[in-house]
Amino acid sequence: MLRIENIYKTFENSGKTIQVLKGINLHVWPGESYGIIGPSGAGKSTLLNIMGTLEPPSEGNVYFKDLNVYQMDEIGLSKIRNREIGFVFQLHHLLPEFNAEENTMIPALISGHSKAKSAEMASAILSQVGLENRLKHRVGELSGGEQQRVAIARALIMGPKLLLADEPTGNLDKATGDEITKLLLSLNKSRGLALIIATHNLELAYKMSKQLQLVDGRF
Image (cartoon, rainbow, N blue to C red; front, side, top):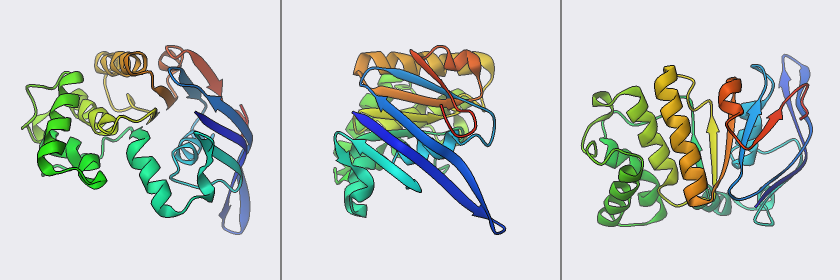
């Protein structure tokens, strides 16, 4: 489903070239879960951004369903991001003036669904993540775990085949983090989607079916 080949990423900083990724290769299969581990600055988030079509590599190719994504135009990339790939971040990035349902609706509205249809889709996915009684609650009225569940629902509303999560439990206490981990793995199995988590948390990483350690720019 997702294939990355010979990925390099360099940055320029004060006239110096910093090489973060040095020839990464990975084949991601539906229904599998992957934990990417490594210290801060190892390039975990950068790699997730490249996989998710948010940031191009300096060298190498990314294929999604055999499409070389970085040879596509921005319209094509936007469609893949909206319909095929879900993103969950350490910070939930919810809009505080909106309630849970309205935050979850956003990708469906962007895709062209009506407000009524988007609300129906949002209600269904929020129920699947255990928030059927919190649809009309604004962000400030939700706990940290509930906010992250809304972020997960928003990531999944369009039925993506790939879910990328960057430190999804990093801002949560252990008990709440464990609940979010169970939810992600449950969705991974029930929906057959590929799940890739970047994390410092070894306990979280080893709950995935595969572990990948990023050291000096390589697995």
